[in-house]
Image (cartoon, rainbow, N blue to C red):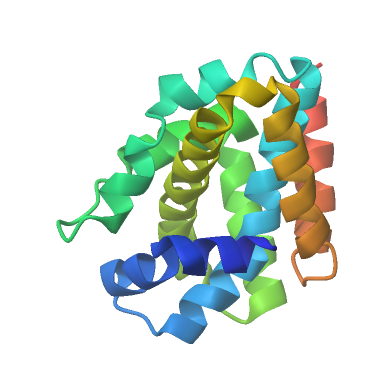
Length: 175
């Protein structure tokens, strides 16, 4: 499964499309361009903390409730998504760079991608948190395996260059 499949199955893509007033195809293109960077940053964070701190991070960011907020028919406040991005990317500059590079890869407007990024972060954070809660008996490796599987499915996407750049930027910030 790749990130776009995950978002479509969760209902996140259609909710994001409605929220931003864009087509499903635009939402999919944005998810393909931005998703690997979000997942890669979570994976980098998990690696830095040995995987054990990731469930705590997901919970502190709002856990599964973030996915529920995006799926709700009410307008979504992106502040929780921006907080998640701050935690995983470390800097608003990285978020801007991700949106800018994703725009080049997807052909979508960078301003649209800047609006989409926190919503996607909320969906991914919520999904990872709910997945961890459902598989809590499997130990801390469950989230790492899930992240790796999602990134493996995204490895052939146009977002791979973004992922590589983000991992370099996040790595520099983590030192």
